[in-house]
Image (cartoon, rainbow, N blue to C red; front, side):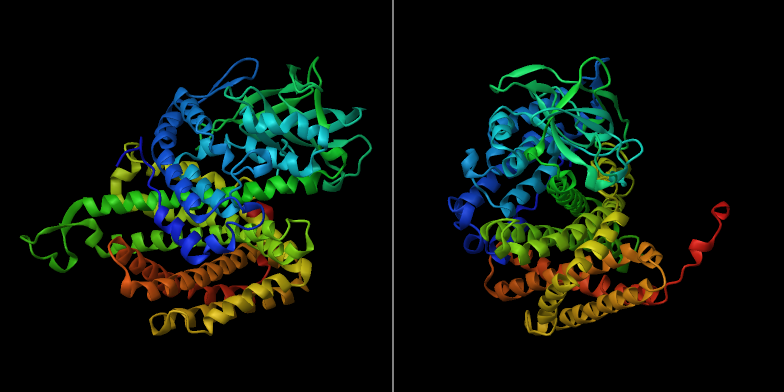
Length: 607
C-alpha cells in the first residue's frame, strides 16, 4: 500500500452496474445522441481510463497535498509540478473528448459512461477532477449561449484546455445566494461590467490553462431582490475579442487563497471583480436575464459530482483497507484467544474487522448503485430529447428527485465509513505513510459545498417531492414496492424483500407524519429533514442492492473464476444492508411521529 499509487478502482462493479444491471449496451449505447458508441468501445475506453487514473493521475495526489499552492502578489496561482504533469497527461491523451458530444468533436459517450469515468478521476485525485471543469462549461455554453458566445468559447474550452469555474458565493451570501451583492452594469449589446467580491471559488485561478472562464452570478442595476434578480455572466480571465483572439487581462483577480483542511491542491479562491482601474467585463449568458435557472444547470452537475466524489473516495479507501486486512497478521482467531500457541491470523479473520469491512463494502456498492442509476436516468433523458422535451419529463423529474439523495447521503455517510476504513488498519491509518488520513481530509468538504446537507434535505422535501404533489416519489415507491412484493432472488432474498417492504412503510409513515406536523410548524421539517433524506436514500439503495443481488443469485451457479467471489459479495452486501441498516428506519419513523419543538424554545444563551 502506498500514498503515491494509492488508488484502487472497482472497475468490475462499475461494469456490473453498466452492463449487467442497466444493460446500457441496449438501453443507452447506439441510441439517440449516443449512436456512435457501442458496448465494446465503452468497455475499452473505461478500461484504458482506469489505467490512467491508477497511475498518472493518482501519482500526484499525495505530493500535491504536501507541496501546496503558491500565490503571487498579483493573485496568480501556481500549481505543484506533479499536478500540472498529471493534468497535461490527461489533456494530451484527449480524454476531454469522452464527455463531449459528437457535434463538438467528442466521442458522444452517455452520462452513465462519463460518470463512471468521473468516479475514477475523483477517486484517484479529487483536486485534479475539478480542474477539468472547462469541458462542463463548454457544454453549458453549448446549451445556453448565443451563437456568438458559442463561436468565442466552445472551441477554446474544448480544444485549447481553458479552465472554467462557477462563481456564486459571496462573503455575506453563502447558502443564501439571493442575498448576493455583486452588481452588473450594462455597457453595450450583451457586454456588462461586473463589480463585487466572490468567495470559496473552486480553482478560481491556476497556471495551467491559457484562459479561465468564470460563470458569475450578479445583479443587474435595477433588478429585483432575491434569486430572481440575478443574471449569469461569462467572465473570462483574459478578454476574448470578437475575432476569437485573446485580448488584455480582464478585471478579475484572486485576493486570497484559502488554507483548508483538505483538497489542498485545489485553489479555493476569493475573487475580486472590477475593483481597480480595469473593469471586469462579461457576456450575459444567452443574452437573457435568467441567471439562477441557468446556473442550476451547473449546480446540479456539481452536486452530482460531489456525491460521486464521496462514493469514489470511500470505494478506494475500502479497497485499501481490505488489502491491508488480508495482509496484516495480528493475533489468533478469537475462538483461540486463550491458546498461547495458536496460529496468528490475518486481521480479516477478526469479527470486528469483518464488521467494519462489510459496512464499507455495502455502503460503497450501494452509493455506486445510486449514482450510476441516476447517470442511467440521465442517459434516458438525453435519448428522449433532453431536459426541455416533454417526452423526457418523467425521467427528468426522477433524476431531480434523486440528486439530493446522492449529494446529501453520500457526502455524510462516506465520512462515517471513512473513519471505519482508517480504524480497520489501526494506528497505521493515522499516519501519512498510508492514504486514509488524506481521504478523510479530502472528503469532508463534500457535505459542505454545493449546498449543505440540510439544504439538500429542504430541497428534497419542499421542491423535489412537493412540486408535483409527490407523484414522482410515488412512482419510485411503486417500483420499489413491486420488488418488495415480488420474487426477485427467490427464497435466497426473501428476508431482504421483507425488510424493504417494512422500510417502504416506514418512509411512507415518516412523510405522512411530517405533512401533519407542517400544520403546526415548518420547524419540524428543519429538525428532521435530514432524517427523511437519509431514510429515503437508504430505502432506494436497498431496492437497488436487492436487484443487484437477484442478478448475482441467478448467475452464481454458472459463474467461474473471480466472478464466483464477486457475485457472492453482491449477495452479502444486500443481505448486510437490509438486515443492519433498514431496521433503523423504524426508530427514525417513531422520532418523526413524536417530533416536538422544545429545542426551538431554548434561549440562545442556554446553548
